Amino acid sequence: MIKPGRYRHYKGKDYEVLGVARHSETEEAYVVYRQLYGEGGLWIRPMTMFSESVSVGNELVPRFRRLEEGPA
Image 1 (cartoon, one colour):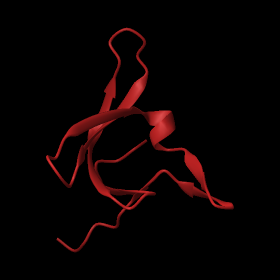
Image 2 (spheres, rainbow, N blue to C red):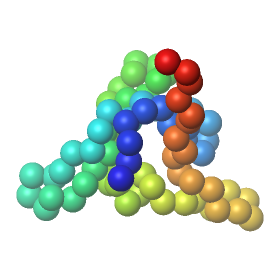
Image 3 (tube, rainbow, N blue to C red):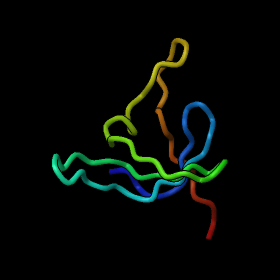
């Protein structure tokens, strides 16, 4: 399961995951996230795509990786 928090896209920009929502017709799970740059737009992406690895050069890297939470 994808946890809320800050994530970094493999291209270098940061996003805040707000949660997971389900499509009303198909019940497919989508990750709801906000870009932490520019206008701060909201985005959704299928959970399977959000959590998959992508090929960069000769290696597979996570599309999004969760950033460690700092001390409270």
